[in-house]
Image 1: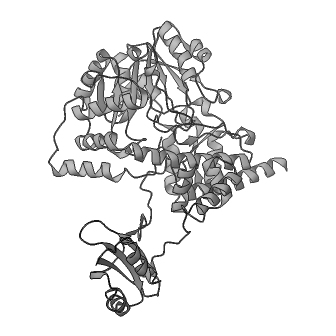
Image 2: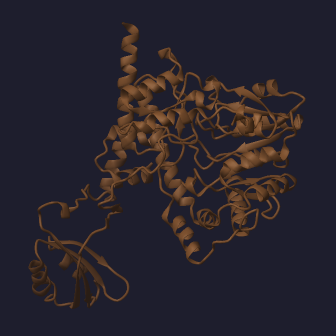
Image 3: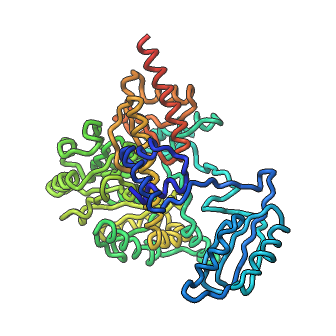
Length: 160
Length: 391
């Protein structure tokens, strides 16, 4: 049940217990217990909403920043990653294989705020060697969802 | 003009679905639950392979029987999922959908007057194809009390000296019924005893919700008397690609290939390349879709229970077949009234044979959201009908 439960709520976290129980063919109480277990084990980390901010009047600028760092003895990249992810404006931090070390997603209201963050906060961290900032111009698909595309039923209305 | 038409074709009624389709098409805001094909688009990697084959200029005929790679992958698939071993060179034919395989399979084996046993309710093309091939169709009216499975007794009663073929349409469209191993073993025994050929239409084999599908061809002594028909439409959501296949004894496949060669030449090349990819790397997609269908199936069964609508639990395909006998209307009347009053289209069971009377085919190849709206409307409709009956 666990995998199927996760795959349902990954797409729709608003679905209620009763409906989950029906879809999975189990009792409501079992779904509730499983969800609590998943939360306790830290497998479910939150229930978020996917918002296309472009369609609102709220200004948001998102940047992806490639960061090269010097790993620290005994702690590898974890310590520097923590220094970065503690900033609330940082939305995501990933350790990356390849040409650079950390990929940082940053969300701010203006370009200036992003450039300030990079020049004042990020670049000045002792173990940061270099940064390269990429601004997102348009989001086509996010979290597995194609934004701006309404599902269309291209089928004939009745077929055998 | 009539003097030009064939008597045989005039004798065949047009599909009952057509008439209903015309009504639905005129209603713009109707919800349709009448579709017999997946709502998923073909998985991207499969489409991509089709596009790639076009880019590479693979735009020619393939061999009559189909691409060798595809026939090999079909054999691998059947070995992997059903444990049946076919020889890709002599026992497999790639066809234009399962439908073509039904047609030419019957034409390859029927002599004028041979009898073909067709359990109904079932897919609309068996009976006309049998008639066109010169056979006499013998209909078995399946019963809800048997969950629309074919029982040995029903089969025995239908067999005569002229019986040549049994069509075995499971998992079933429109009922959603399946046949499990024990059910099939009894049927197989009779077919062997009475020397009957089985045409097993397993187009929905990937979509079962109670254990793995069992093919009758995998049972002892059955491979040599079975034409197994399957295809890509339902499992891989590839209806528009028009691709299916038939597997069977080389002598039969050889004759089918002859008809196919003269009538069709070969199945669409682009579709064949895409299908190789589907068989090689598509198992996960199928499982994802199956899981989704299963959730919707449970949702509908629960909705029927909540509105006290009688329905046996189907374990295959993507249809449920609720009983509407309590309302004292024919299936057609019920479906038309439901459409007119609640703007939901479902197909009357009679479109799939007389024994579909009193039932409705509801397809769950729709998003949960659509199904939810439709079930709210069905509940309204059913409640209204019951109230007016009690007045």
